Amino acid sequence: MNFRNWSLVIGTTLLASGCSQTANTAVTPHLKVRAEDPIQLSPEEIQRLGIVTNSAQLKTIPENLETAGVVKGDTTMTMPVLSLVPGRAEEVDVQIGDQVQTGQKLATVRSDEVAQIESELLQKLLDLESDEMQLKVKLTLAQKIYNRKQLLLQEKIASQADVEGAESDLQEAEAALKSSEIKRRGYIETAKQRLKLFGVLPSAVDKIAKTKTIDHLFQVRAPRSGMITERDIDPGEAVENTKSMFTISDLHNVWVVAQVFERNLEQVKVGTPAEVSIQGAPNTKFYGQINFIDSHVDPETRTVSVRATITNSSLKLKPDMFAKLNLTIGKISGLFVPEQAVQKLGESEIVYIKIAPNTFREQKVTLGARFNGNAQVLQGLKQGDEVVTNGSVRLLGKVVQRINS
Image 1: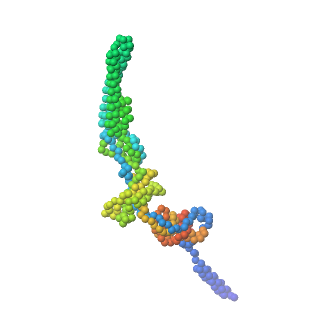
Image 2: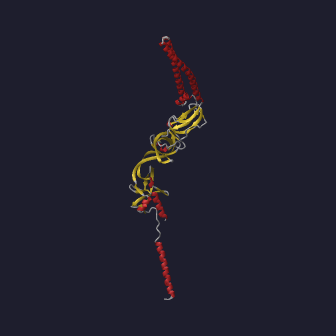
């Protein structure tokens, strides 16, 4: 075979070889991993991802109506604190948010009216004290005369009439001193009653009687226990007896005021159970019930104001806080899974179901009501399906990682 023939054979062979390579590449394309493909994990991976499954179950749960509301103090448990006389604030002892007890001092006020009553008492006591000193001298003298007349009677120098006269003088002196003491107690008691009207404690009057001094001051005290929710006085400001200095509210029960659309009004009644949550304590629930439904519809928003009384034993609910109000308006029966099993993927909601030991598959679902950690499944699952509850987020990440690899 000559050189030309060998070249033809080699060229034909190389061409055939090249065509064979192209053909092989075309019939074995790269297989892409899809999200809906089953994903198999080792027992070690399942443990590391913290995967736990639970079965979809038929349940009956409360049907809820959710709306936004505002926390308000219960006006039946709220009391203004006023000064009963005008004056000027010397001290203010409490701030908004402070818890106070009945009788606790809130402020000290200097008052001319109180000072006048105290001054009158002090003057009467001083005058009475001067009179009592003279009466005591007379009593001492009458006692000495009586004793001397008794001795003279024994020695037959004085007559019985002299003794009886001395005894009468002694009794008169004792009665005068006793009358003065009664008058003293009367002055003090009268002052206590007058000053009590202004909130002055009896002990303050006793102090005046003992020390013979006045300070023109009286203390404004809490008429009930609760929280200071308003403070309208500062040291140095004038105090008016018609203006509230503080507002005290017992916040162990509060109101939550919310708006309900008129289309939902038929489902809401006085006594409807209510659950409240706030951003400041998202894991804490507060419970109560509707106690008032307004009779008027707002013409602009087409809503009706409703009010719920909520138990607030922890005092975490504060006036003017925003709150979420859930009203239980009925019951829903259906297929439910724990809400944490559901993941958002684009516009779809998915769960991962266990289809074999250590093997899971993505399943799109259509959801209905959600309540208290439960999600109603309208389509996509059947009773008894094992769904991933704990670890579903990490499993989703694992799937995305495989797709992108």
